[in-house]
Image 1: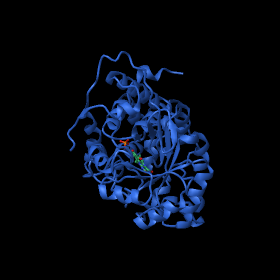
Image 2: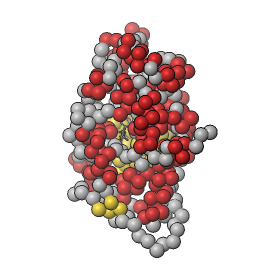
Image 3: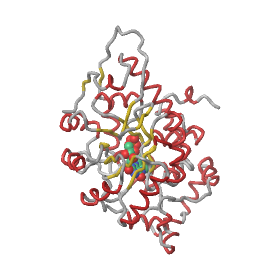
Amino acid sequence: MPNFMKTYPRVSDLEKRAYRRLPPFVGAYLFSGTSQNQARDESINDYSTIKLFPRYMRGRVPTDLSCDFMGTAFHAPFSVAPIGLSSLIWPGSEVALAKAAAKAGYGYALSTVAGASVEQVGPAAGDKGFFQLYAPNDRALAIDLMKRAKEAGFTKLILTTDVPAPSRREEMRIAGAPIGSRSESSPTLRVLMQSALHPSWSLAALAHGGKFRFRNLEPYAPPELLANITQFIASQINGSLTWDYLDELRGLWDGPMLLKGPLHYDDCKRALDAGLDGLILSNHGGRQLDCAPSPVSQLPKLRKQLGKNVILATDSGLRSGLDIARAIALGADFCFLGRAFLMGVAALGNKGAHHVGEVLIEELSNTMIQLGVETIAELKEVDSAHLFS
Ligand SMILES: Cc1cc2nc3c(=O)[nH]c(=O)nc-3n(C[C@H](O)[C@H](O)[C@H](O)COP(=O)(O)O)c2cc1C
């Protein structure tokens, strides 16, 4: 097994290789934000403005990264974020990442629109799995999908609120991705050329059947739409989530449930009043609204307004264990990372699925030693300096 830690000791070391190995239309899907990419870039850059104050003379502290989140014991306070089309980015990545997460004791969240199904990923993720739901128009579909997720072993549900409609995906258009066209299900010549020029990706795709699948949703597509499944998905997932529907879904899921995407206090409060167990502050990695604030910039204020007992996670822009430490010191209980993990499999293939988790754990542990704290509870109390009011 190659020593990835020597060659790629940081997530940022994987980025160039990931870009090189992916066909441009896939790279644009993974990396791009929306519009001018301001929300994406600010969400990353805001982390670098946060300073934490170390405390010395405590000797060499042993670190314990474990935490309880939503009633599950995790060995580290983070999870792979839900990523739609993960198998397009790297074929087979859902199961590979879920297995790596379960082995190391961090979380894995499976998207409604991933390539692999709840039945394939649930057993791999074990008790560290989250199932992410995009509320479909059809209530019967929602009920059946949640039932399947439960039966496959998912106990924690993430309901995503921040996609009222797809964003314009400018960079995907420029890269030739076949979105919003009639030929969405059959590759264009440009896509075929890009694939041929990126053989490691194409070979991995061929080894996984050569055809992209949406296995969670395929059973519900009427036969005439199976050939163009994206049309069926677009008809189901198109901004149908309202507060009334959220109330219904809360009643239908008898386990911990998080709302992913709120950034405004009133939305956070309304979700908690509806009985949701916690929140994931998110701007979807800057992929939806380019003037959305970075979640970490809202974290100190929302933590103060909501109180210390509310379960609050965050995502968007985290690229290191140091960023995880910063988020926790500013009020997060738990973090989700999307592109960091997908860059790992894009750069190293599924045999590298464990690598990003190992980097994050090593970085977080070392950061805690440098700060002089032993536990995640102590990390929450570390003094910080930041620009956010
Ligand atoms: C390629 C890609 C696909 C995504 N698909 C989904 C999805 O299906 N469901 C969802 O709730 N969020 C989705 N997200 C958002 C992520 O869950 C997460 O909020 C975001 O990646 C966090 O930002 P980061 O990539 O900077 O870590 C996606 C993000 C990316 C980059």
